[in-house]
Structures are given as structure tokens and as C-alpha cells.
Amino acid sequence: MFKNPKKIIIGSRASSLAKKQVEIFKKESLKINKKLNFEIKLINTTADKIIDKKLNELGNKSLFTKEIDQDQIARKIDISIHSLKDLPYNLCRGLEIAGYLKREDCRDVIYSKNFKSLMDIKKNALIGTSSLRREFQLKNLRPDLRFELIRGNVETRIKRVLDGDYDATILAYAGLNRLGIKDNFFPLEISEMVPAVGQGAIAVVCRERDFINENLAKQISHGSTKQIVECERKFLMALEGNCETPIGANAISSYNNIIFNYFISDRSGNFFKKEKLIFPSEYAIKECLKLGKSLKKILSKYD
Image (cartoon, rainbow, N blue to C red):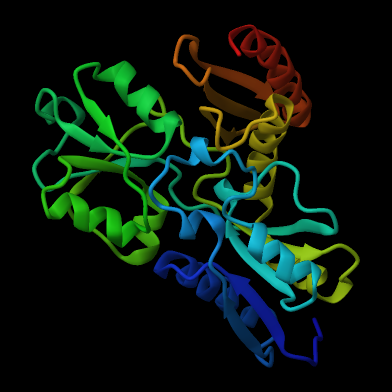
């Protein structure tokens, strides 16, 4: 039986989605020990404070985590809960991902009150996004579409669409599911838009050598999610990707293989590549790392 007599302070961003993800963590933890006691500390990050610029323009690899990391290193919080797609491939020194909660549907969706499919979107429609990954892939499918910056939490972006500021926006299916939003969107298949690395998964971050909380995180960690997201993150690490780099990767476990889809582009969109590969499960992480290193050499020619 897991034992932790003291109160566990959880650090999280303050959005409705972030708070929902904390509740999911708490629910899974209480299955291990019903006597666990939690306190939640909500923290505004750089990405929450600066919402008038694209993420690639901010030039920081820890846009969604810096302030949370600082509190965790300072022992003001014990555990932090993150959307895995927001975590850089190198965490702040002294921190580690100790567990992954079960991955939700990892696809992207088009949110619009007027359109029901990709081909249904009117010509020259205005799409709100701050992601080059999303913009470049959608532009490849529909070159006629226009794109403008939209930032803010899920509810803010939805409101901007419903108010008519944009014809549509692109959101993560997992976030809508967790918030219970059921209407006005349709999913894009992975062949159409490769998701962000780790999209749909929740990461539990602990301090290194914090054995009690590490043990809790490992007990609730979802094994098959861990395998596939670590393939994606090794790929990201090899590319040295961050918010400035348009990168997508998605790993799916199938029998004894990993089906790996990826998308990469340079920041100007001059180089664009999507591919689907199959690796034996036992070698998949190594192969994804190798693939990322080879693609990094190609991308370097476009910098």
C-alpha cells in the first residue's frame, strides 16, 4: 500500500482544462490510497501572460512550464500536472516525468459553427491558430485558407469563433473531451494532420529523488501510453524541437510494432515532409531517435 502521510501540493496552470487534468490525476491517485490529501496551487505561466504573439515568436522552450518549474524546484509544490505536449524535451534540472496518465484521443479538430468537414470550409475562410504545425499542415490541404493569430484557453478561442471573429479554429480533441464539449467540431485524421508530440497525454512531474511522490506517479502511470509517447519525445529530442519548430509526431502500438507518423517543416514552410513508418516495438525508441537525427541534418540546410 502506498503511504504518504503529508498533504501533497499539486502545481498546475489555471485554465479550466488544466484544472480538469488535475482532477483526473487526483481520481487515479485516490484509487491507490483513499486517504491521500491534496492541495492545488494554480500558477500563471509565460504562455498564459503573453497572448498577443505566436508561440514561435516568444523564443522560449518552457513557455508553459517555467513558473511551475521554479515553484517545484523551490519546494513550494510537490507534483506538477501538465499536458505532455507542452513539456520541452529537456525538463528543468532536478525535475523528471515520473508517470503518464492514459492518453485521450490525440487528433486535432476543426472547431466551427458552420462547417462539418474539411472540404466544406468555404474558400478563403479565416482560421485562427498560433501553431505553425497546424497552420502549415492545413495550408497544405487547403492552400486557399487564410490564417491569423489566436491565443488563449480553449473557451476563449471557441468564443472568438462563435462571435464571428474567425470562421474556425484548430483545437486538440483531448481537451474538448475532458471539458465535455461535444458540438461544433469535426476531427482531422492523423494522415491529414499529425498531432503535436505527446498530444492527448497527461504528464506527472516530480522532483528527482522524491521517492514517495515518484512511487505514486509510477503506480498510476499507463504503460502503453508511456511506450508510445517516449517514442515521440525521443524524436523531438533528436530534432531539438521547441515552440519555434513545426513538428508533429504520433506513435501507435499495433501488435509487436509501432506505427509512427511524423511531420516536419522549416519555420518558413519551404521544406515540408510527412511520412508513415513501421518499427518493431523493441527497437522503436532507438529508431525514432535515429530518424530525428537524420531529419535534423536536412532541416539545418533551411535555417
